[in-house]
Image (cartoon, rainbow, N blue to C red; front, side):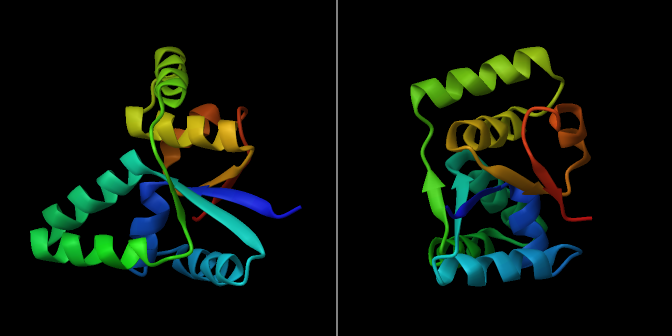
Length: 134
């Protein structure tokens, strides 16, 4: 059975900006391209990548990065009602960002690990496997 991994915005931004953990993400993208791994990302987390790229640079850069991310071997997971409510449950119980709760809910539903360097996930690492980028 192939390993399944959820990338949060931290992981994708680390890859875009060539920060610590970028090589790990690059390696996983190659594994996903050769059908050895399933990579997923929640649509809300993709939105985070977009607005952060726009803030760091500008909207044309953010749009360009969005188009590049869409070409990656990465399944974008839509926010169904049950996923939103699971994330709300997580957010009610733990003091983490709602977008992080959506990444966590996606990983739980998809039986996947999360790749991140976001220290907020330390509060919920007992709920899902986490591979730390830093």
